[in-house]
Image 1: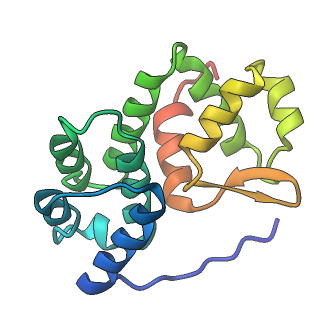
Image 2: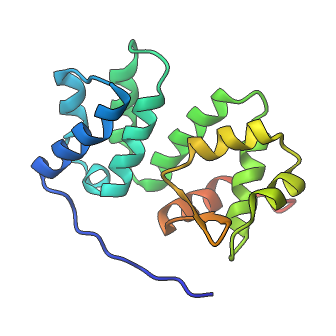
Length: 171
């Protein structure tokens, strides 16, 4: 297995602002001053380009404009990346009727060092194609497709998956 590590430097404030605008514009999502302020907070998590993009993806999908400020604040003030992703997993699990399906699909991807083709993931997990698509779209910032195989795209997310879903000895 060949894994490459790429180090990405922290983004400057104006770069983060530019990323927020570029990310939200195609979705025709408008943020108010307070929401921009929350997203531009001086949090080590949010200075990480990938984690900021993950927050923006969650903001884009958030269902109600009411409560969005609190939702953003909750994410950007996470103590560390594990707590950050646990909040995201909680939010995703609330969207699905069967939270075990989310856990099973993400765990299978995490456990597969070489990744899994979608057909195999469907067969092994037993979820419907629609449910698999919803899970994959909800995690598009953290998964990648290489040579037709779905895999975790970065170590921070893999660590969060292991912490959240792979601690159960019965798994």
